[in-house]
Amino acid sequence: MNVLIIPALDEEAIIGSVVASFVRRVDRVIVVDNGSRDATAARAREAGALVVHEPRRGYGSACLAGIKAAGACEVIAFADGDGACDPDDLPALLAALKGADLVIGSRTKKAERGALTPPQLFGNMLVVALFRGIYGVRATDLGPYRAIRREALDRLGMEDTTYGWTIEMQIKAAKKGLRVVEVDVGHRVRQAGKSKISGTVRGVFGAGRVIIGTLIRYI
Image 1 (cartoon, rainbow, N blue to C red):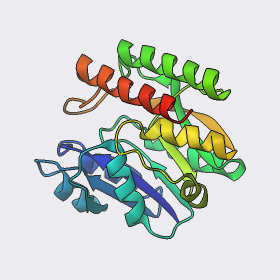
Image 2: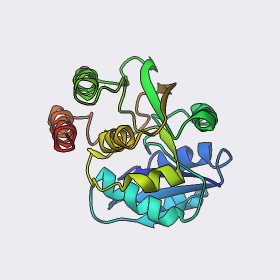
Image 3: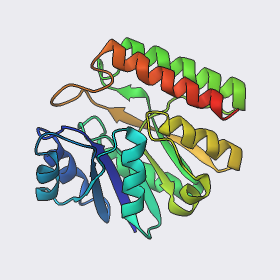
Image 4: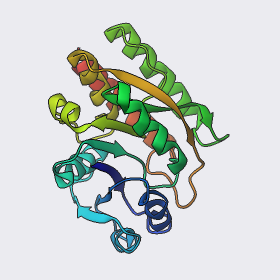
């Protein structure tokens, strides 16, 4: 069984269409409502998702809650709840798992103009360069759109409750010797609302500090 986890916070305007675009592509869609103050949970449920509530704020907290709710399954994929991840790319992510344990969706080649802000692009370049320098692993992106075999995910012992989640997964995968590949994916301009991270300079640099701190912590 393939499960897709979508962390979401105050995405009432878009989450219904996001869920609807994915429900026919996987066996189950789980939306983790990370403390929304709007009708995010109701819209996601109406569109066909299993909704899990995780009031402890943090991207990693939401992902961990979704994993717990997924139960026994073969594959877990992750996507954002703001419409940026193209559902047409999900089959390629899942197909790549035939020869890998973890597949990262790389946004560097197919992202829409303006979908990634200059601070995001710079931060991503810096972190992947550090990742290669410290761990000797080539990567082009820390994108949230990804898929992993459940047994491989369980071996990683994921712990981060913040935006360090994605780099923690890639670091631990490298240390465990997992087969990791990248697949080029599109990344669309946010279709509704304002990003909690890329929507502000403070958010971008705050997330960057967390990611770099996570990178260094696991040396």
